[in-house]
Length: 313
Image 1 (cartoon, rainbow, N blue to C red):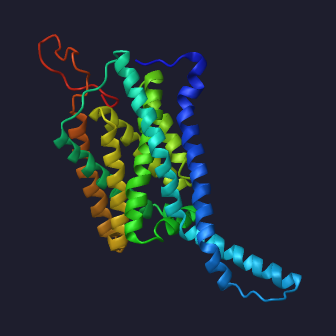
Image 2 (image 1 turned 30 degrees about the vertical axis):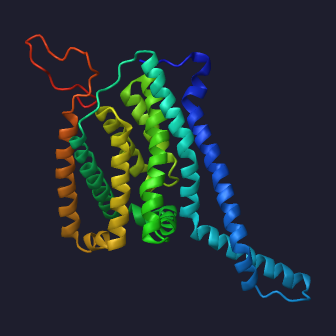
Image 3 (image 1 turned 90 degrees about the vertical axis):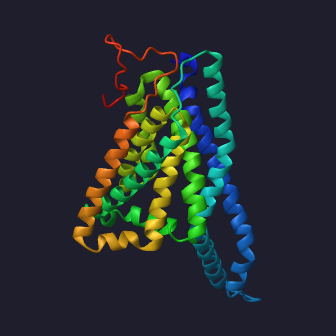
């Protein structure tokens, strides 16, 4: 198990998050600046400027221009978030690669990688979690009592569907998985074991979403993401689950499928039961994956190969 030196433990655990936050902050500022520069001519033409203006008229025109710029910033918020996230990916990937190289140099045991065909279970699980989670949010009225969640949803689903797919369905999930599972979870895992690490990072992952509804959803999803990362021996499994869940949510909203489900209680109930059934089936298949490092003795006293022990056994 890779133990971080005590004097560097704070940086070892929180350094990637600070790097991520710093790059994302700078990236968001740059994206905002570009947006303002590009939009200023259009905004200026839209404001009724006069050759001679009183102070009150000038202040009123300036306030109108500021309001229009803020509206544009809100309109392109998803694109700016994705641009900032895209800037973080190279740095996070470099840190992730360095951690894996250090594991190899130290000769540390690593979990076996699952066969490619077993990744379909993760994709199906991601879709079931997304559909079931969204339906439960509707059934419990959480979506309607959280104003911040409604505002966030309005912003996220405002751009064109293709923009949503690229930004929310691909770029941001990859960036988040590199940070939360690829770096933070793996480093905490080396210090405190699976369950404390998964729970701690999942709570942090939930808080990063900024409202109660998404906190609860993201925390539960974060536990599953850490689990598949552990069982598959690869960050690719977590990325696939996360991407599938986000894309499923986008498709359900774009096609009106979620509204159709919520239109009748019987459809809500059937959907929850179906998601629970198929999600549980996929989870059992994933649970049976033998992730134990190569070279480890897998036989018990009777010579049989036991079931893989994990956090649920």
